[in-house]
Image (tube, rainbow, N blue to C red; front, side, top):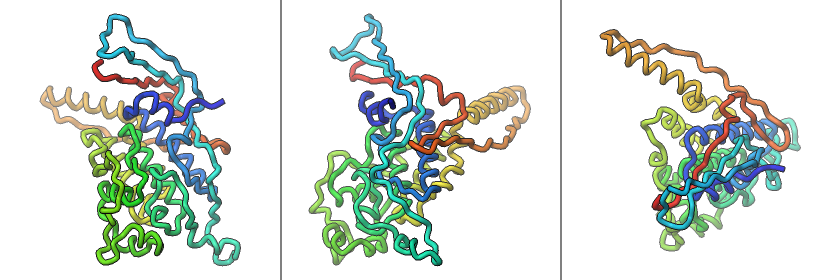
Length: 325
């Protein structure tokens, strides 16, 4: 049997953000799984933390010592996962999208993609909200939302109103392009937009209490890996599906190098050496290195990615915090 879903772990830990190393290890497996699916011409269409489960669900609850003071009766609990290898599962909404071949009539109907409702609201791509045709990039949008959720601790588009949803997207990535508005279905255009101004009907919106922020605010730019992670997520969360990074391209992104533990350790050593040399009145020379090619091993069903990095199998500690501790 599988372990808990990522959502279950987030819930148990009071929706606290994951540490950077956990964000990387989970994200790289999810991205690899989607890359494999798209290579096999499959669109998952419902990527979310509930549909990503840990392979090993063994956990251990550790109670804090009795001499620790709490402001409430609730105790601080450590939920320890022995492994953080995860699988993407629940293919009930997945669809097959064969590549368009002008010489194969069977592929012609897929040329424009699909146009029916998919995806859980909070991870839904703009083209789906607007009832436009959609293809593989809908999965890329969902990945961007999930990664931000790892960083933030809770879903970033927490709303059930399509007008509010689109407005929160504007808060995060900028104003909706006029061309995209004009491409919406007639029904959605009339429902969501003011016909004379091509602007959202915000007076009709049911605004959620918590609104999405500008994308930059979710990252700590003092960390090199966050600079690259921001660039990766920014390429995932684009208004136009054609502008989003592809599954193959995202696996070649620099973030996987700068966030790799071996790379970070090497950079720390180089920084220490440079600091030491500078204190001896010498010019510090930072050596360069060739990043190793990321290696993955995939299983066909359910989709999984197991990395050769030994750090992947270390025990990981998630902490459930309580106010006043």
